[in-house]
Length: 127
Image 1 (tube, rainbow, N blue to C red):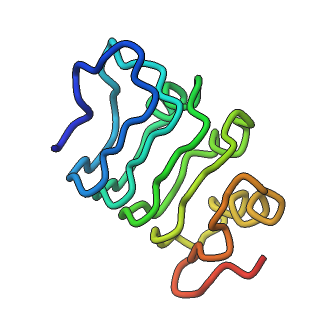
Image 2: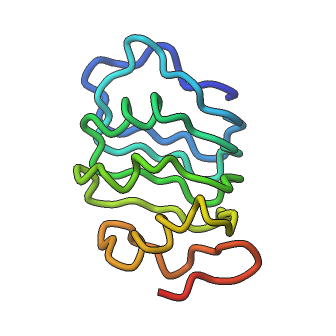
Image 3: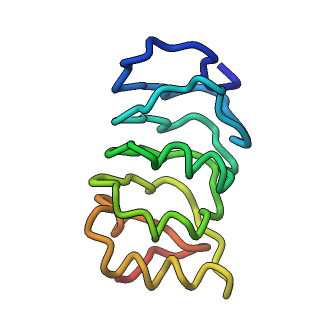
């Protein structure tokens, strides 16, 4: 799949979209339900906009974004405490001043389960 499904059952709580080709997530279907667990691991995601992330974080408790092609993450990610689990490893984060917030945030982000496996630039995060 190259986009999120336009229709899901209204009470869908778990959506597994692993192994797709989602690319740039810039929008969410209008009637997208309030998913509690969203697995987007290995879905070739390059970017995710603040608008999409905000929609996901309204009720999502577990968000899986590992093994994609993301080099940056929206800063909004650190402000949303609703997530009990967040998985981000397998993405190589660009190492520049604009992403310093992420390095600092990861030192105390207990909800980022795989934070010690996150890579910045060519090296491994040293938290």
